[in-house]
Amino acid sequence: MIEEPVTDFRPLAPTRPADDPDVARTDRLDEALASLLPALEQFNRFEGPDRSALRSEWAPLLDEPLPQEGVGAEAVLELLRNVVIPRGLRVGHPGFTSWVTTAPTTTATAGHLAQAVASPQRWWLQPGNHLDSMAVAWLIELLGFPASYVGTFTSGGSTANLVGLGGARQHAAERLGIDPALEGLAALPEPRVYASPETHHVVTRAMGVLGLGRANIRLVGLDRERRADLRQLESLIREDLDAGRTPVAIVGNAGDVNTGIVDPLPQMAAIAREHDIWFHVDGAYGGWGVLDERVEAAYGDRGLYDSFAVDPHKWLAAPVGTGLAVCRDGDLLARAFTIEPGHYDRERNLEHPSTDDAPAPWSALGSGTPDWGVDFSTPARGIAVWAVLKEIGADGMRERVRRHNDFARMVAARARQEPELELLSEPQLSICCFRYRPAGWDDAERLDTLNEQIIDELRREGRSLPSSTRVDGAFAIRACYINPRNDREHVELLVEDVLAVGRRLTNG
Ligand SMILES: Cc1ncc(COP(=O)(O)O)c(C=O)c1O
Image 1 (tube, rainbow, N blue to C red):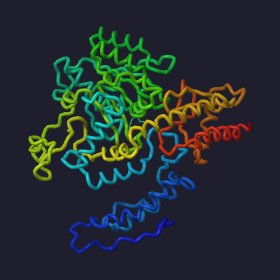
Image 2: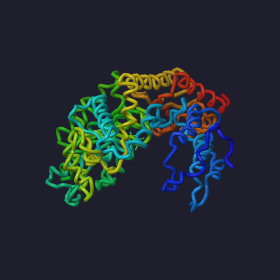
Image 3: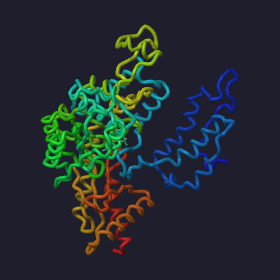
Image 4: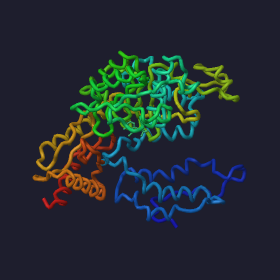
């Protein structure tokens, strides 16, 4: 028996229609969804205690061996309604400032559902294909890239960075007369990628996947503002060139995940240009920062980026599973990710790409190409992005980014004012790192432990939900604002809650 039914609902007819050839229900989607909607709405109110982590409570309701005989749709819906949804991850909670991903907004969710049902393959001519390409073009414009740039939605920032670095690999090898996607990398002498230690670890993973080797990252130290040090960057490149190695890419961070710092991108772009090295920018989290005119200059001319990763499933609050790779050179990208046509429809359809009405369904591919990324079958992720941009417009997104950057500054201002708080990183975007530091507490380890305890306690209370990181070795409370549900009240509450818990733990 499943406990606590959340709502009344009209169950699906217990048996499938006699003429249904498959055991899975293919009818009554409306009623199935209607029976889940009150639970979803209730979840989004984030009321009551968070029970997502109480495995001993929910696992016994779910654990079972592989069923040989199915229980039918209604029993599945009941589990979703009464066990899975009410105990979901509350990353959309207005006090949740832990991650760079969040829960989707209303139209993003609706777009996602429309995509899952009505647009299960992105490439074929249909409105979903059209909207996906339109959403790519809108984002290219919104983020300030020249209209000649191409883009493709990916499963996230990890794959968007992989795609960008795939372009870099192609560029570096082609200069030496090698097609690495076709021939492999054996003839490429000692590839090197340059990036600061704040670079997200998916970049080194991408190097591994691309055969460049994770060990071949050249870590550029940080300057006083915690940005990639330009002198070190230049000297590492010269050293490698002198030694006959192959510089493949310079990677700049447009908002690192720890503190939200933007590397000196215009200067890095100039160094890349001088040596004809590919310039890739990871803006998975902070690429959206260009929409705040107070910090936009830090990003420099986007027309100098060779590739760029940005995540609609972060600040834009699209459903998780939505990244975007942008590239200056679509032809080169297609050489890097060429997929040979198979002997089925795609081969035939490639001969008939169509932007006009096709003579019949499935007789033409729509816009975009799987040669710009690593997916073949893929949903039209852009429907959700289109839905959000159409709903809130560029101005809505600009307003969100500014508001969130202001929130981080509000926390920083309080951390400067309050004698028991210490600001650890000045926000450039929407991340503020600080810690509780009572007077006379100078021992680094003791301070780390205290702040770890504060985070644990805040999570138990479930009202203010920051994450942690380390800034120059110190354990920091990290608040990151990208969640559209974050509000001013919770910004204030975070500071109050940290002070209250800190005082309680130190009897201060
Ligand atoms: C700066 C940065 N790059 C890349 C990634 C990886 O993105 P995803 O988790 O969408 O694969 C993240 C995610 O935290 C990030 O913050």
